[in-house]
Length: 147
Image (tube, helix red, strand yellow):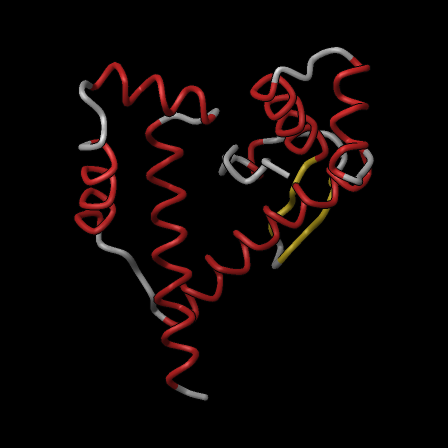
């Protein structure tokens, strides 16, 4: 669907109605709406016709997109709380290594920043995504050890 590239760890900074609560963490409706708007802008789907065509091509509707985004936040929260419970952490040098490796694919910092912008994220958000991925891998390994 293409919404996975968009990132925000600010589900706690929202206000208004609560879309979901997971392990005591509230995910706000305005956070979900902002995420959808960001995806629409990133994909060039700002008018209703192009958005509707996109949804039809993807075989979904606005409620389905909303559900996917909420599930993204829920998954993130479950990974983070599971990692905390199991004592799984990621060293910042690991994240730096992955980011540096990706950056090395670009001729300049400007091109790197442009690629991030096209993906709809900042470098900090990219780092957060890498850290979450590494934590998720380590958590799976740790849980797998006990199986």
